[in-house]
Image (cartoon, rainbow, N blue to C red; front, side, top):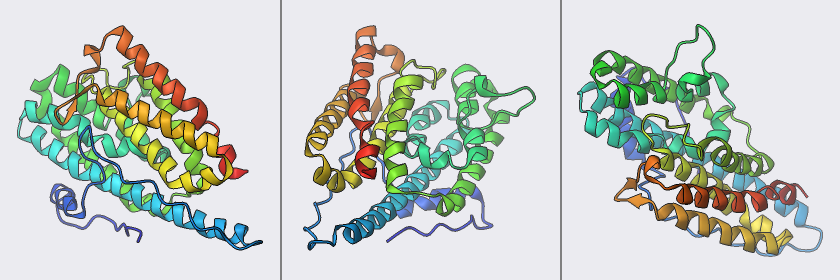
Amino acid sequence: MSVVLRPAAACGLLALALALTACGSATTGAGAPEGPAPAVPAAAPPGGYAAQEALESARVVGEYRTYAERQIYDAIAKTAKFVDAIKKGDVKRAKALYGPSRLGWESVEPVVEAFPEIDVRVDSREADLGQGEEWTGWHRLEKALWRAPETLAREAAYGDTLLVDLSRLRAMLPKAEITVASMATGAKELLDEVAVGKVTGEEEAFSHTDLWDFKGNVDGAHEVYRLLRPMVVRRDARLTATLDTEFADMRALLARHARGEGFVAYTDLSKEQVKELSDGLNALAEPLARLAAVISG
């Protein structure tokens, strides 16, 4: 059953966001287990495949919409704890909560990009800004925490702004147009974002928590594949076998850099380890690029 999103109530945003933890998080720490792939539906009678696939597509889209909504719930709940630590001046705790707070957002970026105004306000880096644009969102708080913690008292207001923007996104998500084709394309976009823009370490320039972002992007792409897999296996069993292997290898590679409930700093990786990650992403991205064509074919 799809989660129904409602606008934020009049009570304090922080209290509301903290209360959302009762809904349950879809993401956990660096080594969170995933559920099994959906079973392949029983064969349809002759002439009934088109109707069966239309029903299956509707079910898959509904399940993915619920997943996206839960990821944003998770981001709000964890960001509320992150903002609370900032307001209390607890720099160590705020730093520990920063990476996890972004995990849900990173896993569904192709969906949230349907709302560009919020995307810019929540996730822009300083270098992305045009002249005269106000900088808001996670990365402003990231810079304050790692570069100028003495400014946190006045920067804390941007934490409230971040929660407002995430709550607005939560209310708008039901309007996002989602199809099985857009899901497949979005999965490839998630991998491209890591391989092109994040493997350089430029995304988390101050915190170096890039491996949290890697995990969110890879997990989000894997969830799309998990939901589409029964459709793919009927059309291209060889592609399914390849993607099963490449996703397992990529996630195992990320797990090597896990420490406790998080990850090592990206700057702690050697050049060889960064190249290994890049090669793994490229090996997964190539077959994943064929997913949309198989689903649409």
